[in-house]
Image (tube, rainbow, N blue to C red; front, side, top):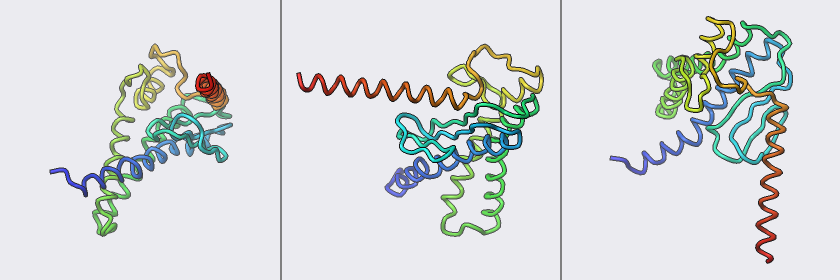
Length: 195
């Protein structure tokens, strides 16, 4: 039976644990891309209007589940670099999941065991859906498919014309256009209120 304690656990999972795992996943891209001389990296968490931009971190107003990493260029651009960058999120979640699971199995976590069990669950959830090669709902390949294609063919072979990772400058341009449209809609709404 689903009770109040389950509702609290679900809320913690959805609004604390899942965002933390998503953030760490995106950090996997960032950490590995630094090894290949990334320029203009950005980790965007959420969507919609910007709440705050701190250096390379762009925090948006709406739900954290839609998050991404972008950059403008790699100084050491190669097939190997792309394979490593797309392996980054898989490896960081795998490492964290295994490490925390090992610590839990050895008595660490005590009264917060349920919290950490769920953290491990979501970490492995992302490992599974990042590592197994597949095409996602929007027709884009997941990380596993990108790694597979780059390893086997040396290039992208799916039919989606969008880049694997967007350029930070393109993301910023898109965001500015989005905000301009929102301001126009707000202006039109105020105009209709006065009429």
